[in-house]
Amino acid sequence: MNYVSRQTLERLPVYLRFLKSQSKSGPLNTSAKAIAEALGLTEIQVRKDLAAISDGGKPRIGYIIDDLVSDLEEFLGYKDVNDAVIVGAGKLGKALMSYKGFSDYGLNIVAAFDTSDDVAGTEEEGKPIFHLDKLEDLCRRMNIRIGIITAPAESAQYIADKMVKSGILAIWNFAPAHIEVPQTVLVKNENMAASLAVLSKHLSEQLMNT
Amino acid sequence: MNYVSRQTLERLPVYLRFLKSQSKSGPLNTSAKAIAEALGLTEIQVRKDLAAISDGGKPRIGYIIDDLVSDLEEFLGYKDVNDAVIVGAGKLGKALMSYKGFSDYGLNIVAAFDTSDDVAGTEEEGKPIFHLDKLEDLCRRMNIRIGIITAPAESAQYIADKMVKSGILAIWNFAPAHIEVPQTVLVKNENMAASLAVLSKHLSEQLMNT
DNA sequence: GATATATCGATAAAGGAATATCGATATTCC
DNA sequence: GGAATATCGATATTCCTTTATCGATATATC
Image (cartoon, rainbow over the protein chains, first blue to last red):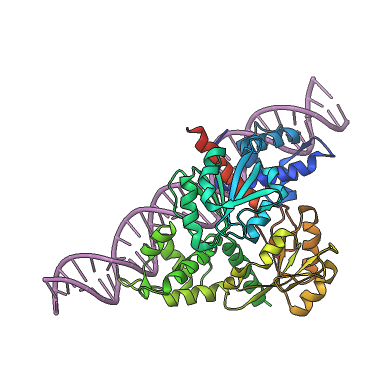
């Protein structure tokens, strides 16, 4: 398995989703061209992306869908289940807790944490919500490596520090805040403001032209 | 105002957030170096980004924070309020409806739509939830340009088509699906699977090395 | 079996974004 | 007032991603 760029890596789940939606009925194989057309990419890009993670297609045939799905799942690590915890059991945190789709991505949210006594002790979709004080203990015991921050920006750094101390290696940060962590820990920011900037800029350009 | 790349555009809200958090107390000016250090970027990048949207800083002084904030807000269009609608009033849709922070980004969610009779007719945080049939009428009357899709993947394309027909020009898509729209309409995918892929890959690499 | 065609993979070229370099300039310090 | 210094902006370079080209090959067709 080769090195893949971040851009390629982010496209891989898109291929996987598409291929899975195809595999049920219809032919057993597909081509880079077909994938590209369905997803709005170029076929060269598709070929290059797939070359990195599969042992390739065949001329005139293309790729065997089931093999590709399998290669993608293995590469992306969706076959191992990754347990995760959420800190911040507000509306967004609860929405993520009850989202069924994560299991498709090998993500399993085992519990949430919050400092508010109103929610600590309750549960959501059968998953417990504990007081933040219990974070480290649970993470250590269950060997949790993924932490999701859905708390206000002010507490994001504090929570991140606690997560790092609890042995978490990858943080998915929904709070609008930059957080500092050791080099070995990865922070993936889900930056809604960035998305909004793109939308809003497009709009103002569109409206200017009319 | 110059052309800015998508990458720069996505960083601008990050600068804005940081500068706003600074402006309250402390000095009136700041430097590219200080911003870069706080946000984990290089100072050259910060300078280049800011050069595109402000009329610049001064040697030895840096940038006047208030001026920068103002320039950023103007460029990003946060001074005009952008009205938006949500389609899909499930947990995620409701979480977005009640998120207070959007007003900082000039986004105002005016209503949500759903096909389920259980939620249509109710409200969330004082915002009405209507039946999807009423989407076009409301969008036309209120001149809505932004649509947010928080529905299951299967219905994403159907909803997008309806949005386009309703005059919407920018779609923020949280459904894990690729949607096709006319060239004038922008789709910004909030691709959670992509983020998870990055997290999961980092994890498997980390764990391999130990 | 020979030719045509679809499709792949490897290598090369182009395009864009991040980074480095360096001269210009506003302030500070002596 | 002149030298030192912090900081900026413009230009050049490097790096990375995407796109293009082209030869190779598996199947289909005659």
